[in-house]
Length: 570
Image (cartoon, rainbow, N blue to C red; front, side):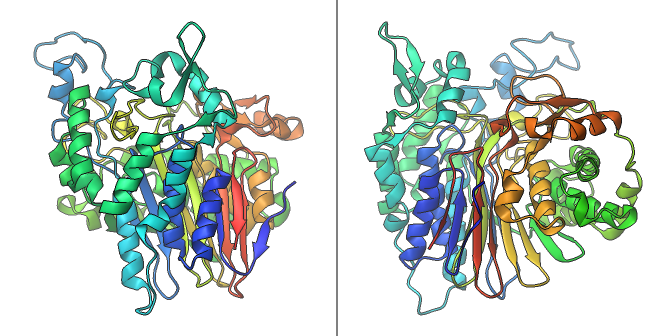
């Protein structure tokens, strides 16, 4: 067991050790946690390309001393051309309601390739907005670090090369048949067999990304604005259009990340924050609120940590939270009950679900002796979560993604940017909760969390893992805050996932093998459809991490043994 790393300076946690080290170096150079996170975000985009990239989206939670936490929504909307009519012209869509015309190629947006690249990549805009917030709220005498310094680690790794991780190799092999056919992918991320066929790069092979290095260098010199309204934007838009994507230069020109009010839930000893729609942040906060309510009414104690009682309460809370999420969360302006589609009205509607009264009503529907049946279709997705805190007390919880592993699979030739396929979250059928329309934001599984405890502690925590993100965050938080576990022990302890995993059609309750035996048997007897995985530490169950700052200045950081991660302290 790796012990939680502790110190009295700054701390960073990431699912790849090179990203954690990049953040640590920025903190050592006098940067704050926001600047460290930009360096980490750029680095992780280079060293973990199967999980995220600068062609994807991102979300931030930032807590600066003396200020309320703020959130940054760096989710790109659907292109102006991305309509149901556009996809019908390409042979994709549902039967026409009037003529009864049959399905053509399919009822869903293509999962890979240019047609799946239909939303603006927002994460660079998020970096830009976070740095603007940093400058606005920093002491007047403090000098910000140069963008070239923040991006230097990523540029070096892209030029010099990084060792291919085991997960990148495995996922390249798993999706080889489809990804090898996407524009630019084989040239950037695959090798060749002796007969000239594309093959996955071996674990430990050196992966160089010179085009991406040049793009990051361009951003360092010209500024992050160039990604949307400069020479880089023009080139990317031309290549997106040439490949067949509906994205155009006007879509990039019009994009800016947004500062938004985070959702929050009041627990008995803390307030926990997360992102509002289009993310599933509401679900994470509901699970935590329901667990506290169940603890109060059913006497769940510290001794119940990692027992069937603990797991059952969280699993049943997850079901209630997902039912609310899937009836409500969509593009913010489309949230039911939001006055005239306003962002403020959307957030208020979601926040109402976290009131003590609303949580109590949901908790009353949970049977602590028996499982609710669960024929549920979960959301997919892979991503990265990272956290950072500095010696002045600023703490950041951050998440970045290209949605599916390797996103659309399409790599733009001159920039080396691999575009996301987040638009798959849209529905091509009309009048649905998440129907496709130009300018709408897609539903996001991404949701970083941040907890402010009444005793002065501040903790950033999160994970990758699509549908598993709220479940893992709830497991980690309750183990730390309710059952007395250290950060590292809480993250390393055996986990579970309610729902379908990649390539699987079942919606069973999946347990790591360390939960086999009495725990699995008890949960099955309560009515859960239990499936025990072969692995003791399964990559399927996410790459979690956490950083915590104590009021005396002590910091802690922990990473997931299921990833290639690292926790680094200054």
